[in-house]
Every structure is written in structure tokens, then in C-alpha cells.
Amino acid sequence: MKTIVMNGMGGREMLDYVERPDPVAGPGQALVEIAFAGVNFMDIGVRQGTVWNEMPNPKILGVEGVGRVVADSDGVEGLARGQRVAWVYAPGSYAERIAIPATSLVPVPDAIDDRTAASVMMQGLTASHFATDFYPVQPGEFAFVHAAAGGLGLLLTQIIKLRGGHVIGRVSSDEKVFIAEEVGADHVVVDTEGRFAEQVLRLTGGEGVHVVYDGSGPKTFQSSLDVLRRSGVFCWYGPVLGGPGPLDIMSLPKSIKIGYATFRDHIHTPDLLRARTAQLFDWIADGRLRIRIGGEYPLADAAKAHADMESRRTTGKLLLVP
Ligand SMILES: NC(=O)c1ccc[n+]([C@@H]2O[C@H](COP(=O)([O-])OP(=O)(O)OC[C@H]3O[C@@H](n4cnc5c(N)ncnc54)[C@H](OP(=O)(O)O)[C@@H]3O)[C@@H](O)[C@H]2O)c1
Image (cartoon, rainbow, N blue to C red; front, side):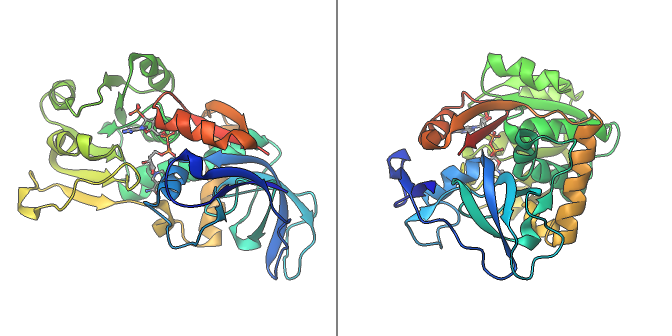
């Protein structure tokens, strides 16, 4: 089968489009023919060696996708041959086929097409975790969402709006403002240098926001602290774009609470995975959650997808087509 293999940690030159033997499903695993693989910023972090660097190279990149079960497997119940399934956190997804533990697979309902299912696993589950578990946004509250036109930001904005919150988004260019507004952001500020605090405070009558969702790297960190109101919550999620460095706890203002959120801490069992995915699929089927596909690339062009994401030009979800 064709795959994208990463030969070592570093730049996009580490990615090779190569032939590899088909995977063989072991006990409890299903063999799946991949229809779309999701591109995530996390994949760039894996490539650069920032996250998931414990798996030796060379290895097949990618952790997310959708496809069809192609063979019956030992010890796998409830998954028929031909069944459409989606997954996240399954290493080896930039490929034509993958062997995955059946417990990591989510059946995809007929109402949800392949592209949509592949687009919602990582970013949808993350957005849902951020706005409902890490900080359950309440009606009328203000949330500040970084990278609001990105794959995660667009879904997070919509889930906060579904919960009755107000969203102030931050994007890096004027072209992205309309895209964030289109899904419901109430205000959008344009900034790349961390100089948004004054504007956000003005938009909240000087009080600041109840919650900040920031995974945008060291440049935004201090201003994100500055826009929190008393007892506000800082949801930090950006290991790939870098952290603020060591923090002096006594420098944290206004009794704020701060934490590093990852959805796997809360959505950590197969039942939870299926329940939370089913909720996302319901919202999509009802028209309450809209998916924006920002780009589709042949599997062979995975390095170009990475380049586009790293250039900050992309919006919404990027997909690879094996
Ligand atoms: N903790 C978790 O569980 C979890 C799960 C999923 C994703 N994440 C993190 O969430 C972030 C977004 O991931 P994603 O896969 O959903 O991608 P994404 O939001 O579709 O795209 C990345 C966004 O990040 C911004 N960006 C790109 N390059 C940047 C740079 N050099 N410096 C600052 N901002 C930059 C861009 O927004 P602007 O240009 O508008 O700023 C872009 O829209 C990543 O940091 C990822 O690691 C965390």
C-alpha cells in the first residue's frame, strides 16, 4: 500500500511517499480501507519531534481518518465487513489501509458523509471537551478563542454558541475574519503579535472574558492572561506551537485558574468516545454544527498540506485522500 512515512524528526523533507506492506489485523483489531485521513497540527508536532516522539522512526504519520472495514477479524464484535468507521489517535493513518483496535473505532451513521466524519474526530472531540468539560461555558458568558478560523477554532466557536456563550475570536489575517463570523463569532480581532488585550477588554466592558482557549504559542500567552476577568479560566492546549516557559504561580492575576487540556483525559473509554462522537454527529445532522473543509490533497502531497497549515493560510479542516 502507499503511505507517508516519516524518516526522522524535522522539516517536511522528512516525509516520503512510499510503498509499505499491507498491515495485518491482530486479535481485537479491524483492517480498514482509508477513505480520508485528517491532517492535524499535532502531525506537524510529531514530525518535528515535539510530541509523540517515543515511537521510533521510520513510521507512518497521521492519527485520524474514516474508512470501511475490509475483513472480519478475530475477536471483533459489532463491526461488519463494509461498515463505515472513523477514528482518532490511531498512529499510521496517512496510508491506504490501517489495522486498528476495534475499541478505537466509531461507527459512522448514514447521515454523515466520509469527509465530515474525518473532519470532526480530533478537532470536534477536542472542541466539545474544551467547552463542556474543561470549562462548561454558561449562557451569556464571554469566551476568547484563538485561531478562530482554524479547524479547531471553528468548531469550538460553534459549540460555545450552542451553549449560549459570546465568542470573541482571534485570527491572523483580515481574510479569516468573515470565516469566523460566518459560524457565529460575535467579534473577531486580527493579531499575530499578542497585542489584542486592550481590544478584548473594551469588547467586554473592561471586565474581561470568563474563559480563554489558547494554543497559539508563547506570543499570545501574556495577553491571554490579561484578558481574563476575576476567577477566569485559562484553557491552554498548545504544546505544538510552544508554551510560555516556567510560570511563577504568584504572577498569576485575579485568582484565575489555568490548565493544560487534552480531550483524551476526559474521553478515555470506548463508551465515552462513541457517546461524544454520536453527539457531534447529531449536531451535524441537525444542522447545528457546520464543517468547513479548507483543503483536500492527494496522500502523496501530505508535505504540501503541512506547508499550507504551517504558513497560516489555511482555514477549517485539511484532508488527505489515499
Ligand atoms: N490539547 C489537545 O487535546 C489538542 C487537540 C487538537 C489540537 N490541539 C492543538 O490545537 C492547535 C490547532 O490545531 P488544529 O489541528 O485544529 O489546527 P488548525 O486550528 O486547523 O490550524 C492551526 C491554526 O493555528 C494557527 N497557526 C498556524 N501556524 C501558527 C504559528 N506559527 N503560530 C501561531 N499560530 C499559528 C492558525 O491560526 P491563525 O493564523 O489565525 O492564528 C491556524 O488556523 C494546535 O496547537 C494543536 O496542537 C490540541
